[in-house]
Image (tube, rainbow, N blue to C red; front, top):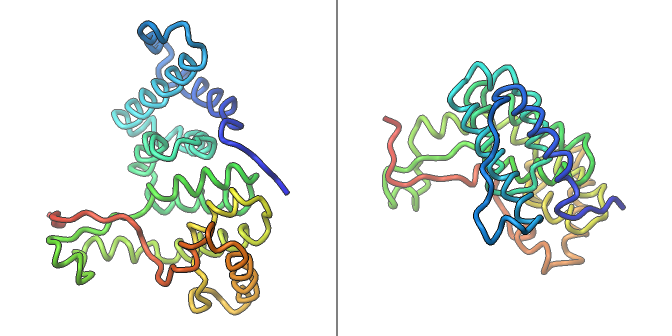
Length: 238
């Protein structure tokens, strides 16, 4: 059983940030934190990491050619980024230039082939890689009537969502580490109709695992539909 805890990837993430910033903005340095935090080494490290991530994201947004050239290395950094919210600072500028499909293919490959902790980082990043369905009103949202363009954008990556679902299911069954499984459980559902017949045995095994720990996996046990979990209300396609 491959175990991990948040913080294990910090050194690799810091190194990747340093290498990218040395290339795209070699003269930049993060400002020092104010007192009384300056003498707190843990806070200094955290502050430096957050400022470097933010600045790199700003550079990539302002210079799309740079973002395109660095995309593989930026995505490798995203796969080490344990922050469930700030990871989008690097993900979105790359997705803007290489496209959603390329980013999602990469995240699927991480779930399929990388160590457990990076699989978890990929699941955390997947959330921000999704299409955001747009609804013109709360009534449209209640009636599940997204705008045509946002629905078409979500439908365009339905095949990748299926690949992601399959990858998360297989990894969930393979890994016995409960925190790893808990994150992977966000990427699939226990409905055989969503899977090819050759994976139905994995669905059964995953259900047995979830039913043995219903408190941990209550969301997985209750999930009945698949699709993006992102939505905007009061927004049109124009």
